[in-house]
Every structure is written in C-alpha cells, then in structure tokens.
Image (cartoon, rainbow, N blue to C red; front, top):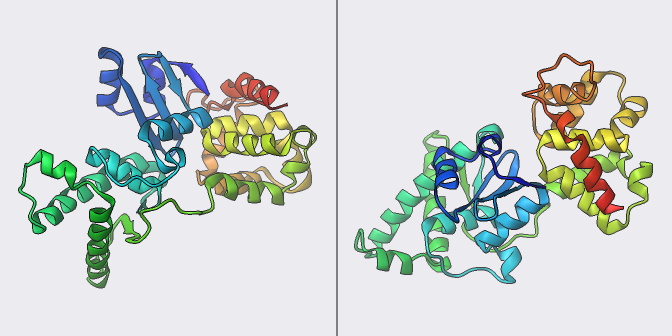
Length: 296
C-alpha cells in the first residue's frame, strides 16, 4: 500500500521520534523501519509512505538485502546496515515479545554493537579508528564474532541468565526457511480459504500475492480482506461454533491478541460501539477492494 506521508501516519506505523523529526524537517530524507506491524519505507522526497508488499519491497531494496542482490553481501558501510542484514538473513534472531519488537531490536543492536567493538579490539583494532572500523565490517569477521557470541551465550544459559537474542554462527547467508506468508497459507488452507469463490478465480500467482498482502499488512487490513472475501462468514458457518473460538484461531495465525481480532471484526459492523480509533479494519474496506480488483 502507498499513502501520502503525514506525521500521523508515521506515528501510526511506528517510526521513532528522530525519524519523524527528520522526515518532517529535512529535505530529501528517506527512512526504513520494521516492527510487529510489518515493513515500512517513508520518503519526504516522494512524500509517500510504503507499507505491506510495497513497504517490504522498498525496505529490502533500500537496504540492499540478498533477495535483491543475487548473492550475499561481503562488506558493509555501517554497523546499522551490518546488523539489519544479519537479522533479515537469519544470522541474528530477535526472540522477545513481538509487540515490543522495535524496542527489542534496538536493544539487540546496541548489545551487538558494543560486543562487536570489543571483539575487534581483541583482534587489534584501534578504538575510534573509523576507517579501520569500516574495513572490519565484513562477513568473515561477523561469522567469527558470532561463533564467539555462541560460546558466551552458552555460558549465560549455564548461569541461568536469560537473553532476548539468539545466535546462528554459521548462517550469515540467506536461508530457505518457511516465510510468514507460507505459514499463513498453511493455516488458511486448513479452513477452506482457497476454496472461496473470490479466491478460486485468481491465478496461482495472484493467490500467492493475495496471501502476501494478508500476511504482510497490519491486522486491520487482514481482517477487512477476510470480510471482503467472505471468509469470516464462512468460518462462522463451517468451522467455529462461537465468536470466541474464531477470535482465538485468527489470533494464533497472526500472533496477536484475541482482543485485537475481536475489535477489528466488530468495527466492521457500522452499529458497533467498539473503539474505532484503536480498531481500524472498517477504514480498510475500500483499500482491500481496490487491491483485490488489481489481482483479478
């Protein structure tokens, strides 16, 4: 989804204060972020915010991740780019509360930045030598560093200490892992999603795109799309004997709270007294219809 850039939208999509300040005051400023709502790219040069599939594409494109490089990266200019790449190819896994992903990501980045600097010092890097630091931002050093981290992590576990970061020392390359979309497709398939009339008439490619739209956009969008496709009505008629069971199942698919599912389903009813500021699926009705029409 592509929208006009506004301060309200930046806050809604989880951009931090510094990013919002720069986007609203500096010329030709662009910023990318990822959180539990998805991938986002904002540009005051274009005066646009990209979310959903478009946001993910921009996020990876601007970060020059392996999906768009054709081969793994070997060197990096900044630690921020270095760390972001590591997270997205599965070399670093943030394992904290998904609702606090941005906070956990920032903490993990800070910890690794500090530890990586210590690691480079142990290898002879002269602290504060920026040129030498940049030259050390290589895949080879990172894999060696992560091997060191894995050892330290085991020591922490033996002591009973807990960490929100886990390490995969030999996985600093893109992994053929099951994606968020793949997992959702499996769940949807169990409940007849791909047998819905509006879904069956799409090509296989566009069925995949539809699943990506649902899995990468925020929950209100996904709920609105389910409603438009007739999936919510079908689930109630064929699979769930109560709203509570429906809310619980959908919450598991998207790893959100049952209350969030309930609120977004209920606001689709124009007579509902749900908080329409907090639950916004009703505001996505036109968007999901337009997106579907593009896929037909």
